[in-house]
Amino acid sequence: MTVDWAEWLNLAIRWFHLTAGIAWIGSSFYFVWLDNHLVPPKTGEASGEVWSVHGGGFYHKQKYQVAPSQMPQDLHWFKWEAYTTWITGFFLLALVYWVGAESFLIDPAKAALTPLQASGIGAASLVAGWLVYDGLCRSPLGRDNPVLGAVWFGALVLAAFALNQVFSARGAYLHVGAIVGSAMVGNVFFVIIPNQRKVVAALVAGEVPDPALGKAAKARSLHNNYMTLPVLFIMISHHYPMTFGAGRPWLVLALLGLTGVAVRHVFNLHHRGAPTAKAMAVAGVLALGTVTYVSAEKVTLPARAKSAATGPADWASVQPIFAKHCTGCHAEKPTSDMVTAPPLGVMLETYPHARLFAARVRRVAVDAQIMPMGNTTGMTHAERDALGRWIAAGAPE
View (cartoon, rainbow, N blue to C red):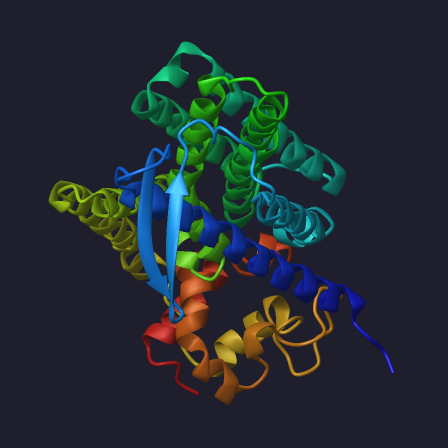
């Protein structure tokens, strides 16, 4: 009996990462909701309170803008949700994209990198991302959240463009997501939790806590709130080749990331009871603009296919292409060292299977041109066009 430990490890880490992420994002969303629903208390020293009902019981929550006058006996900290999400995400990034750099990260058509070089660039991008973000927060720009957000967004778009010049588009997407995720957990580890510890220490010592500590922590928490939806999009983006498979994938990432920010702003306004029509319109325009741009890019593909040399469009003409570039992985018994079973159950050895998955083949191999992964087999444009003609003809036998 043989056990594919790498695949089981991948599954375990991915599952752990997803679970931790739900806990972190769930608590983040909840506390933002809580802040936006606080009302001045009728009595006591709290700065705000809210009553809520859930699970058959009533809850009464109070917030102290700086700190209560006396240290409570039991204090719950929200930090390990963030730490565990980042740690598992880092292991997943290293396992899939750094250990498997030749298959998932390196694009020979862009840069002739070794796995060690590619992994080094990836790791350096995470460190550089945090240094740039933290530097912006500590600069005079940090006093103006909208301006800071615009500059940080511009830095991320620049990072996406730069990484796309040396990595596969999919690998570039995931590294931008890792940069944003590292900035978010850095906020928790380097600012929010340390500031809260200083407040607790002041209370224990019988001193008045510095209000600036809570203000700085609150600002970083707000930043995390707006970065959440773009990160979630990147986490699922590898399932949708039309995004990272576009001609300018960094631009699609920027548009969808900005859409996520706009949608999060809609929720924040709604929770505060503020008008949301303008923010919803902006989010809608951005989403529609993204779909329009990606669709407009594809308009040129039929023209290219028409201009390509004509040839037979039957199974006999494309079967050798599938055999050369696809069936190493997409077969009942794959011969590739990268997989032990056909990914997503897609098999392309026989005509019935190839015809069944023809539409998917067109999306990833003809339109987006992201398969074979990293184009390690060297599929040519002529071969992609031949597949396109066969599929456009109805995938005849």
